Length: 391
Image (cartoon, rainbow, N blue to C red):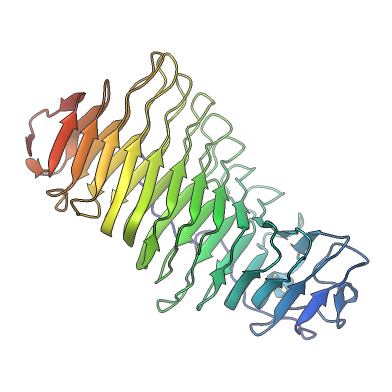
């Protein structure tokens, strides 16, 4: 079992510089290249790169844009108030892409407006994995102040591709008082591509960040001992009815995608740990250490002979009678979902627990003699060991 605590500061150099020629501008219909930091690609001929700048996008024949490729620290950060995709705009892909010859990450920082999408089309942003050697930083996207993400936005954090490195990062909140919003956007945290990686792609909700009905998809590692994608929720804000999907690995020894919630107000949020489809591959994982409101937590069963089910590692969770924790049956010889009640839980005495078939509840990782839960229904196995369970 793995307990994740992540800080975006780890292994990353952070710069908040801006170019002297910065200003709000519109991407040209016929730019000369796909490079953001070329003034000739904008009207007026200036590069949007300050905290008050708006980058506007309409119809263009160049829609795959590289933001970054910095060769020194002074050019490693793109600062914006926001990006606006106008009505009828093309469907773009903007990639925060570090250069292969520098250790510095390429950041896109949104300070106030965030991303406004009136185009009626899906718009994509990518925090690219470092292309070079070990210890090189990947791309990152920051939503600061009150910056928010609009409709039909997909943000992909690529999984790390070299040993010892992190994947791409999207971070909501930096200063304690920041109140950015993930809105109803979709976030895809890819799994790492090689063994020995620290993390795959990452999304962090910190400070007082919020969400409405966002979707967070954490993908598994793609090689043995490769890290899965990860979402970290540690916010004083409301994450609404957002969905946190943690997919199982398909490669023996690879990690599944995972979510950790430490704090956050839930209003029907859903946390799902999917089961694997082959023996030896890790299921999706959800780790809970706190939260308020109400939510559902589901460990799916494995599919196929000996396939591992999803894991719910329950410490403390939103302690409401509307909160439901369930472990489902495995199929075709697969193991059932696993609920592991751990640590020193104090918020489970109203929570409903449900089990089915060969699902398992395990108390052997408790650090106290007894635990009380609101209810327990269905069939399955409860491993008490020396501990006691009160219902």
